[in-house]
Amino acid sequence: MAVVLSDDVLNTFISLFENLRESKFEIGDRLIELVEIGGIDKTGLINSLAGSLRVSASTLYDYYRVAKVWTPDLRMQYQYLDWSIYRNTDPSDPADIELVEQAIDEGWNVSRLKQEKYGDNSWGGMLRSLKSLLERIAEKTPENSTTGDILTEIIRLVEQLQVEISEEVVA
Image 1 (cartoon, helix red, strand yellow):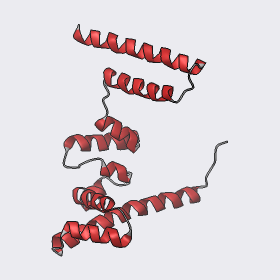
Image 2 (cartoon, rainbow, N blue to C red):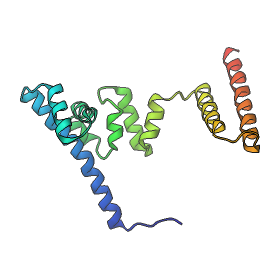
Image 3 (tube, rainbow, N blue to C red):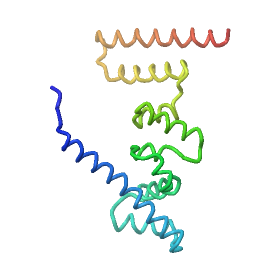
Image 4 (cartoon, helix red, strand yellow):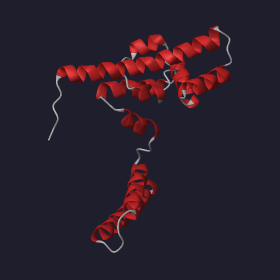
């Protein structure tokens, strides 16, 4: 049964997530100020804060790095993105900006952006991913089961496709 949320409830959560994203940028901006204007050693600052706040130093380094590359002007230009999209892109890289714009236009989530940025979208790459996924599923399937037999057959067919595609590429 589908859950229907009122506009008020949905707007409250949207606001909370926007505040969360903005807080991450604010933390990064303040770290940058302390390092660049205050002359404080970045490693010492982050490690000290991480210990005091009981947060991972890598999280603070992440906030610092993302705030540094996604300047306030760029944040205004590319508003309302998921934090992970900012984290996985570099606005100084034209290919990344193209991906960000495509993500905005097509309503991508971060998983789709990462797939487009890092994944191998060739036939061969997709078949390797499919075969790997099927093998992981097969490992969790009871031996001598109909499901296992079907998975084995599908894996064999994927392997056959891989051979045919590699032969087409050579031809």
